[in-house]
Image 1 (cartoon, rainbow, N blue to C red):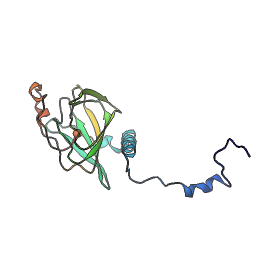
Image 2 (cartoon, rainbow, N blue to C red; image 1 turned 90 degrees about the vertical axis):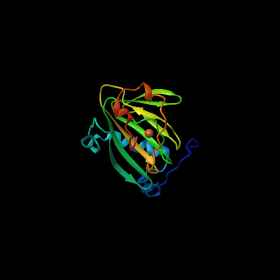
Image 3 (cartoon, rainbow, N blue to C red; image 1 turned 45 degrees about the horizontal axis):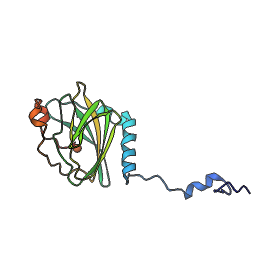
Image 4 (tube, helix red, strand yellow; image 1 turned 90 degrees about the horizontal axis):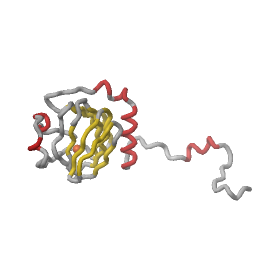
Amino acid sequence: MNSDNDLQIAGDILEVQHLLQPPREHPATVAEFVGLARSVAADRSEWEHLVRYDATTRWYHRLRTGPGYEVWLLSWVPGQGSGLHDHGRSSGVLTVLEGTLTERTERGTRALAAGAQRVFAPGYVHEVVNDTLEPAISLHIYHPGLTDMPMHASPHCEARTEPAARTRPVTA
Ligand SMILES: [Fe+2]
């Protein structure tokens, strides 16, 4: 026997399959929610044909629901923004699918390019804006589903001239 081996498998490896944990149908951890967002992001056929751009109001579409969570698809035309808000009781994962969004928090401003992900806990306050000249698309997972999105007074509002940025979003 080779003492360097910690794992000894007797018999046919294929028969071990029934001992393995089946993949969970629904995500239940932060890592799994991040993974779900990445898998949706990678499968453009699931969402690309659904996207609409609306210059007069924020566009959003509920892409998927599961036990205790919701997945939303959002589009942002240039200049559109969420306003400063939190997410009530919900935690979330924000994933940029296309374009670049700017996220502002009390800690500063960061550009989120396609593929960027932000994970946030209940109480997280931010503002998301499309500051570019190209439309952007994002995917938002909320756990539990977003029922309340309290708006906060934004220190940036006075400096902003785009009317669309002042509209109250339903989800972001
Ligand atoms: Fe948000």
